Image 1: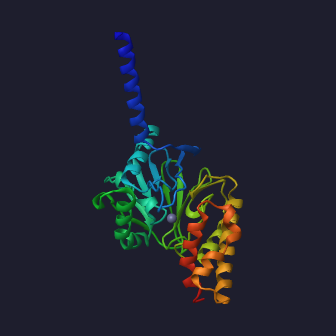
Image 2: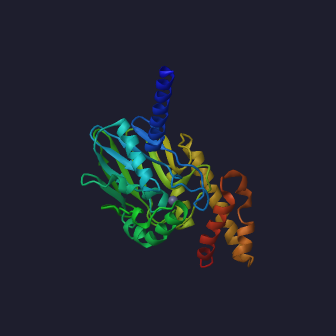
Image 3: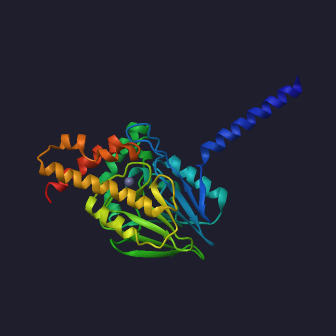
Length: 309
Ligand SMILES: [Zn+2]
């Protein structure tokens, strides 16, 4: 009897440890040597959003670590940090945010340390400030997170539009590039020069319907530029990292061309916004997840801009 009880207690402890362990770190995959990605799930912000929908991860050099995007909540940021600490004890020297959207920045506070520098587009601090209140309300509404726990940490190292910066993590250089308005007005990408791994942020969506929150024409131009990159692997902002990156950029661009041309046609035919939402780009519906809701949002965003072309 005593033996059974001991076994039972042992089993309980084992269970508790596993539950604790699984809640304190995020699942990561090593997609290239020293490059780890946690892939978010394709939930919409209005539905089943757990703050864990975007891709986040880190790059380990010989003497330091760079984190790329931190997730939608402080808790996810902490879990990402725990995953980093399972792989290395090197200092986390940089936290890089690919852009302002809430699913990419609200884990930053988990990395707040005097030795860690935050990096972003020169337009990111203002964009964060402009959205602060709205994002605090969203996190309260959907995640029940009190406003004081939705903490912004803006970047202190800024990269100007169309400029690049190279950082050395120790025998490992990464190139950060800032873009003109596309997905947002504060998009950057990160290229690991030693493995040819390219973190596209939300300048590339795979599986999930792409989002325009900036300028669709600028976005299409950048997707064209990406075709001449000399890289091996792309990590999208949402979806599965891929070596077949040319096809991924093409598929993304194709949706945007169909979307843009469809909206232009609707405006020419005097279709109203609502009718445009119901009809434009429907040929793309079967190719993407969360299509109806996001395609409608894109049309809502783009239609008024194209009306003034
Ligand atoms: Zn985004």
